[in-house]
Image (cartoon, rainbow, N blue to C red):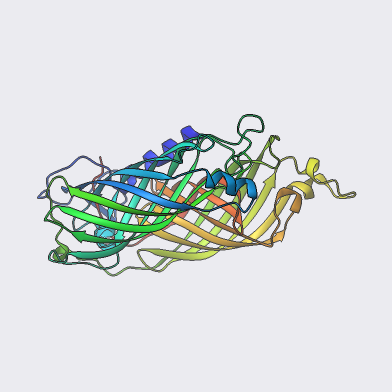
Length: 399
């Protein structure tokens, strides 16, 4: 699982802009690997290096054991991040006001061996709320990150019974911040931020209350190569709406009791969507769920093994498109049929994740399925997208 997460983060880092610096004056050109309505160009990107110490309030799981563990811990951390800004005429860079995209490393300590010293590798983006001119010293925006974490000292009934928060050494890393930036000099920026961070394995290994925290950080950012981004060159053609459909097959594993067997959970999904802008698409879908081992958890007499293992639902779906071929799928589902012994303990379920499109029509990604605030399973998915996009996109070359 950890190797798969690393591969996914590497793929996403390439997709969002990790590249060699290339001459800015090269003209746009067509690339054999893209569809006919895409054009690629070479561009020299603004390269940023950031260092961010932080403190945080760590949220308790509500138990006396969990509170005692937090009371005996002192949390602090730092991040090192590398980021790129892409100039015009890159379509999605213009749409997101020349956001910074990159990769980062996280290190923390609770000064308590029961937690360990968690670290993380992640992809991230920082998007300003509006276009600021080059004379503006104050700038405001939002930041998000998704990746993998490792180095936890997980729960163990004999060796580490106090850590009821997390049951695995390797976990998902998610963060979201609001921030304010102040330009100290032409290439130096101070950034203050506050937000939310979550570590979880989505019930792959129990216990999985997760570690939730409210961090505050001050970042020092330096523009290494002095490249300036000129928003006056921005030109975005009018978007042409279109319909598309996704067919997805997902797989994951789930542990139902601490120390118990992990069982496969699969999902077959069909989605019909309407993309009405460069950034967003919405639609409806159907899900068919399979939970292996349902016949061992559900002892209801007269109920077939098929009924104990299969359930279904209808979904309202949305996708936030970060770049052409990279999106954040979100949705809310309503069960037609559910089985509480498979932890389908609410009538609704939620879904959020990360998805990449490659070779024009193929999909790969990961979503987290949850019931309320409780994670159900990581859904690793592959799929096929039916679409006929009539829009013209300009993209920087990322290799």
